[in-house]
Length: 291
Image (cartoon, rainbow, N blue to C red):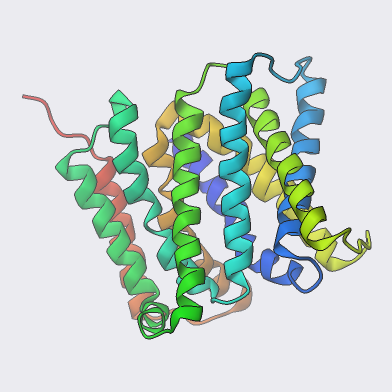
């Protein structure tokens, strides 16, 4: 049950990322959004690290892994920021749904406890069908679109794959503390992103009280720092495939949030889609009985 609580926290932390990114893009380039998001996320985690009496990890092997984690944080962040300029959040949700399938596939080869079986694959496919039902209009739009609309879609798919690789790396890398993994990975990602953003776009015009900058800080604290801690911990105790279920739960969360907070109407199609997604998750997580 605690695992599901952590998963719900991830859905909440990540659920607002697309909307906050769209708002931030009115003032900042995709590269600077990524850089500021990772930098603020690192500062939060590093502060907690020091207050906990820990230091950044040492050793070449650890930092090779942390560099990979930093890259698989920065690159997906950038791909999502860039693609959000051109596509609706709905189609992003559909394409992000390939994440659990890809995670399950690569986890099969690296983690003994994550071996693929028929029940797991069936559940993941059912969950993906649920997302397609929920966002079918965006999916039809995507299939009918031209190459200029297609490239951002491909970027979202690669972002989902990048997150999957990151989850696997966190699980199989050397056993350093959760705070060290998170702070080290974000530090590498922030340094790379800041250098690229400065070389590409120069210095940003930052107004501390502006809503776009505050949106980036919210992403840095909740969607990056807090989500990173929860995701890294959950990957260790529940497995990468379980963590990737957030990709299925994000679209229903956005729909429910719209109904509750914005008084939006919910359709039979949306209710059906949410039920299908839940069925898929139950099937994929159920354990086969031993004789």
